[in-house]
Length: 337
Image 1 (cartoon, rainbow, N blue to C red):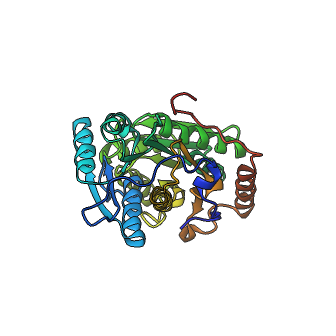
Image 2: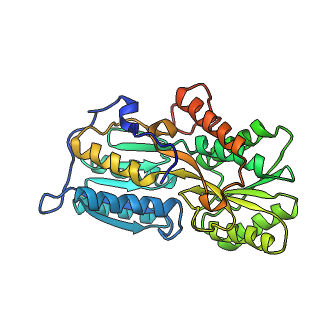
């Protein structure tokens, strides 16, 4: 799915293995059991869809018992963690920063259960934050966006202004300015991940301010975001969009230039394999371009929109990130760092 993704695992790069005991609870037949909580629909073609694909991969390739629940409130987070732990699920993914507090509470009650929290902030003996350095991919997307923009005005539409989301925009803007230091970059957070109408209006407002290239960091709300760009193009004005979190190039191929991608399925599968082997670290798992976890993927349906020389510059920047010669701006949000 991803372009230029090396196969080195994030777990190996961390060099912190064999910290946890062998897997805890299993099903009645001894089959390891893995659960997933998401706070939004897995039909969002983005963040939650990637997690659900990862869960399915774990079930299909490892033969584990799997289950998924969509939970919307903190009370539901607590209830779901406890229900799964009581039912014998030994590995539970909470896919989002919002699950951190509930996981920390449940972990004290169920020390033999491992809780993996995407974008989590507090590691403990059986709570493992999984941090995707998506900022590295959005930096590359910013380089592409600056080259595509004719107006020199670019827009960013986000959901909730949390460090992980804000960090992707900080890096995107840095990538833009690496190509066009004089660019204007607009930023809007709508306060919700799934509000399609709000995302559409936020994108439309930025387009009215002269933006001709936009990137998002929302979930199901991305459908409204893409529609706003599509309507401007249908009106005869050039405008482009960038996808986020998952390879969304086929979601709106008529308007998407490329996507900043997290290979969530692969990272979930690696995590489950390490858990099964008893080698899952009890420290923060960081996953970026060097780990094969994130990348910028141009849309083949829009071949030629990004100039060849810029694609070459993006390839060089990617190599520099892997080598450590280019440090992409990010916002640290793990407690204690």
